[in-house]
Length: 426
Image 1 (cartoon, rainbow, N blue to C red):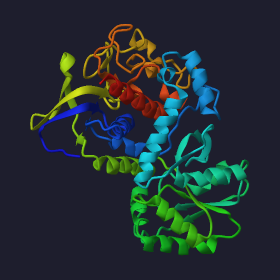
Image 2: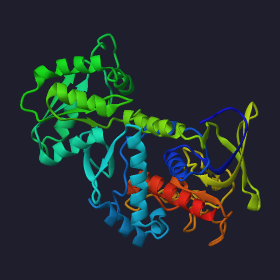
Image 3: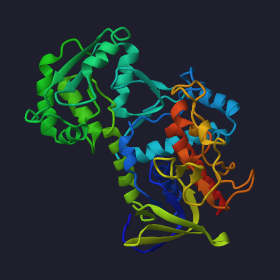
Image 4: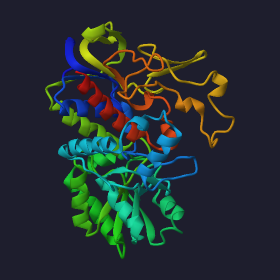
């Protein structure tokens, strides 16, 4: 990766470094495409580290089989991003991403045909598809109702082992809780997950933690911790703690800032840095100009550090309102860079229902860009803006990902489909 000011030339310019953008960069470099990735991926630190494929549709139906849920969505929401991607392509996208992460030392697990039940920091159960290996054994402990101890730490906010055990008491009677003072933190009023995780990168701190915990272990078959078990090599941390404690160990995802989200982002960056054909420009894109059959001109940065990119294709992974891919104004919603048409309600009054948890959801969450089967943004019902302009991720219309619990799946699968479409168009 490079960041020095220069004019860059590439096959593909990816705008947006969130999950869809970074996944697209992985798929692009795996195919030997010279790639420029633009933007900041800091928002990924707020992710839980869990990756949903399809969780809920309609509002009251939670799917054990995400593929059956996707089939239902294709029938009932024909404009949903999954509608033009086959199950095989979605599966290939996740397989390719998992392989990339594994090379960087970050192991993910899934059950091919079903969502798995994951414990949350509130003591509720969440269905997810692809989960960190450090979380996986918690799913096994819950499925088997194995006697387990949940541990938290003095001064750590938004995570209570007692709350988890109390909430799950009827479902999981063999659960107990314990609060410990993390080694060398007695002088601190508050401790933060990322600081604890960095401390546990040091083997001596793992030994200290195990020594504190061992006197409290009795018949418990598993030990669960908040997701703080190391940053750079969580698998190594878990393995050593299991040896020291003589029991399987698992993590429970915490609210943001999320250590699994940080791990995920860092693993992607580490892997992409090794590719000479990948250049990173950590600046916001200001302008995109189509040069007809000559490709695109992209300008990023400000007057003090302006970057120019010439590329054969562009992939918009700019996200929705938070990522500023979509801008909400009094007159409506607009796409920020190219003025692409945005599918949206007829007026602001139609954006939301009067109740927050309306069973039909809110129309504004379905707003976005319409694309064709090659994920090219449309300026009319069947006319693409440009032959090699593509879009992926949450900027796409009809995904309603927060309600359907499919955000990560849409991000990864559409990035994969868009990169393949771009490559086929060369």
